Image (cartoon, rainbow over all chains, first blue to last red; front, side, top):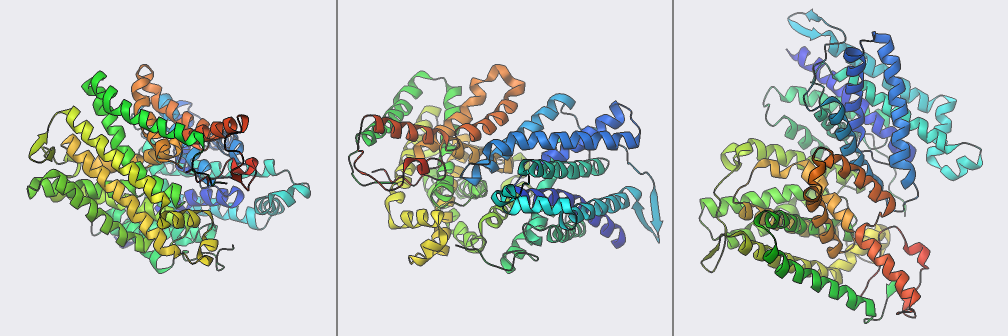
Length: 287
Length: 348
């Protein structure tokens, strides 16, 4: 029973972590909080559903095509929501613009696939039994794939040369351009990676929930995890999200109606105890 | 950018515009429009009162807060319960619940204001989620998804305002009072302290402003407006249900505030009216209405990030340069810098 809850919690946490990582990448690269990340996530679920059940493609083709679609959409997203506003002096404009984008994407999806939630079959069917605990393979699959992807992305950004270029462009656009880095390309690449990551997250989660436009609301939990972990770093975000997932899953032991309230209550309590999150920056704000 | 003279001719034009808006709203709208239109506009007015809270916290104090909907809920349910279960006169109940909301907000603000910028924004998002699940699940008190029905209408001096027109006029009176309060707040020491906190927190601290308490009080004042709006909404509709207070409504109100121009109550008013009326005007588009809305918001941020009021203000600047109105009185910053970013103009 407890093992089952733990596994469910960790796998949901992994989903939130993928969302949070996608957001953190954008925060680090362009300093923008993306409220439409949840809709990119939902789009991931819909696109893979269409490719699997409506186009009847095999698994590998689905994944390849889907990632291509996500990357293109990420670039499109950047050129419509971020690029025209990058010189705006008020950061709130970009936040509001992403809110607008989230409504837009939701409506486009509704127009194409309709209002009725769609049902997707588990990607890996079957149940693993360990001493009375029933673990669905789908949950384990999510944990493995999610962990690999997040690990890959963070390695890319921290260790590889490409990642270093991207970070340089993120930290100081002006001097990066002086060094000959095309910041437009690195920014676009960051958006593409972010969109692909959450898109795959949407694919993974689609068998657990119905494929519907309300999937976007999972982003709020991702945000919560991100804040608990400490804003703007991947390690903290993943830890925070796993914690959120586990708390949420164990909260069902006591109450189902107030499950969400408990999660967000934990968020506020953490913020009161440690206002910068557990892995937050150690230096304070400069003048 | 500071205008030091009090009588720039254009400020009279602005004043005239404000009076015109009030006259149109008070006389022409109730006479000419049908009951349905009137209820829609009343809805806009109610949201406008709540958006004034956003104006205080976002426009004056520079903090993005999604919490207004939570306080609308607290004010609304408090007023509903006070008037229906304890039989208190509805106007008194509204005022009591507004005060109650303010006290609750003061306590919550004391906790949340320990957080900076984005963290604060997130914690308000969390607050909205918590309050919604409480409103939705605590069925004995709030009625949950079924709501509380048959709430008493507005009642002044024993006269119950049951018709929509009468309630509309009362709403308008409340709106005018709230606008005057908001405008007055701007001129007080507290209002100026809020502006300085928005522009540069550390500089404000060096000037001897208690940043923390300024923010907490701004939060409480914003909540006061929201609480009043919630109470107005409850008594206007004679009904309250948990779906009035979702996160979506909260983003809608932020967009209203931004669309009109976060810098000025009149701008906020235009935003509230526009966002509420747009679905009515675009009825033929029915299915695509929310799509138009989403794309509209995105385009708006590109082309007029300061909202409608920002556009009015910059046209005014252009005009005054053309006709040399009050040119000598403009001090400091060149006009290029004055574009974009929160406007710091103190127009007399």
